[in-house]
Length: 96
Image (cartoon, rainbow, N blue to C red; front, top):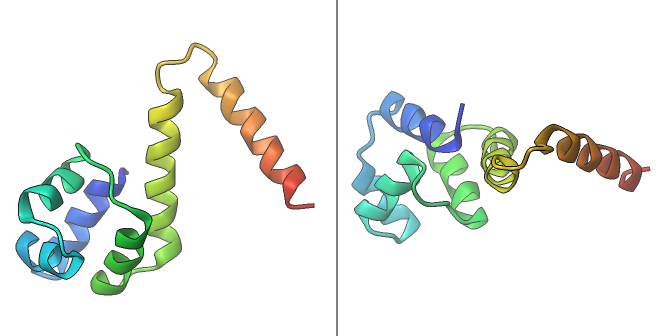
């Protein structure tokens, strides 16, 4: 699932309007709509605020948000899987 899809799902479950969340994030409704459709990226601070507003785990939203960014970086590369494996190894090494 992509970040925008999850935000839309959570918003609809809470019966909130796009304009309500947009106002809380201090952005306009069309920009929020683009975030939901995956046409624009939310900022990290907005992800944190959305987790709070939607009553969901911040780590779940951050995971989806970051995964979308990584995907955008490697999606057109022939060696995307190798790139992801290498990045995973670097993360493991850095955490030791």
